[in-house]
Length: 115
Image (tube, rainbow, N blue to C red; front, side):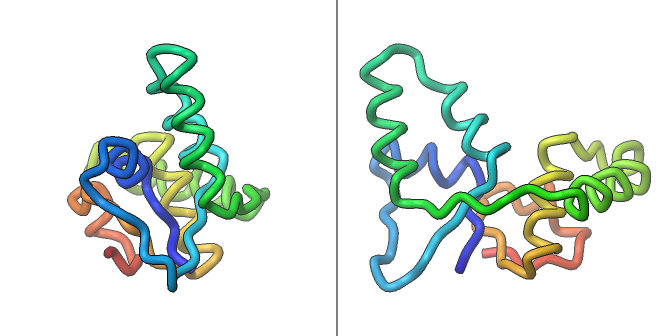
């Protein structure tokens, strides 16, 4: 299973990338909310919901939030880590998932496999 970052969902919506049908993909609620936030109207929201149906929604739990807080303490000042990126990174770390993202610079200093 691969954790897809919000930028990947945006590219799927634009039609610039496609999912591999032989692979399983997942997101967390933060990624889901970031993607939904980008909808400009009801038609776009319907398109977003259709795309989201292709992803397994993995649970955010206290371990993820605890690790996110640790990451924020360690990297928010030195690497400008955001709350959202900390939660996404912690999700990948806790579930031991590779992260599919175009924003590799936001995660390259972490022990995460980046795709």
